[in-house]
Image (tube, each protein chain N blue to C red):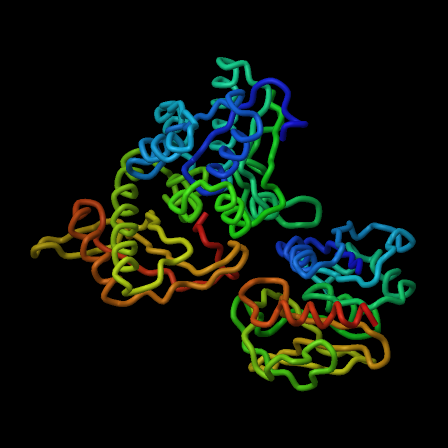
Length: 303
Length: 187
């Protein structure tokens, strides 16, 4: 990285393992010539911005929080196709980085791209499965020079790098979180209203699963999250008819994200998740389902 | 030990590279258009891919015929790679009536070199739309519990094929299968 980067570089962290490790690595390599930003897309998890500032602050990296919520909401208005969404997000990310880079005079963009990102984005005879925002979702033209130190690694290897860098278990063992965030977990159009619903459902799923795992009732899955389905179904709440959305719960076991099997979570835990979601989100959600598909044939994320 | 991975376009081609690297091999991924003269190696792996072998997709990777004709090194074909190998020697690959995605139970019928030291039954991960239904000059090493032909070996050459994917983490004994293949390459 030292030989590749002359002058300043910008990096955006999403709170996931890859961008965190890439940020720490880049900071070690070029020190204060690194400008670290967190783009609040409006599709992040609850309290994410604060969490990242605190986590990276401990390691001595300052993070600038950029509020881009309105930009992302309006760019995604009316878009339902997963590929169009990913490409719109990829484009908006790079334009936001360019704007931030202009302020700090950075010419380089450090990305936490790992092997599955470019593999699944397709190339040549390798089929496009999904366009990752940092690879297949990039627009054709952009001004920044991209540096990707983790390109040949998988998640388990990135964690080993994080551990070797001494960044603390909480940072390197965090579950994966996609750059496009909750936008690709809202199936169909990702409206701000739906983002708020999913944000809450996500924190319930995380809280319940993490609490069960800490009590030894189950193993902490490799990844666990909620998705919001666009189909409405009938329910009955306090003798009144309801017609609300469905939340899908996904929890998987994997090593590298390239294959996965669903986690055999205890029924009592699934019941608690279902109860809490349908109670706390009663105006919007009246059904919860558990995803029991492996990868392949499904992917881990739904879009 | 230098083993080259020929890319048929699989999501898991890079996983094959990682397996080989983790086992201490020199390895690199090459495009299927690479001339055989440039493949200076001790062994070759043909990856899987989205190409439909037996439905015309074999032409997209047609350059690989040369490797089978001229290389004279141990070769392991995985999924589409295996189907291509079988077709090259006069076999038939066609769309599966029961395609398998994800978990399959493998039953080893003849351990040969590839399955040495591995239990007779194990769990593997597959992802195929096609399968080999005839493979003249080859013997069957393993099938799935559902009866799908999963692993084959040439009667006289060190050429192997598996329909399941030994390179992915969810396949049990995948590392051992690669170790066995590396053993064959060492000769």
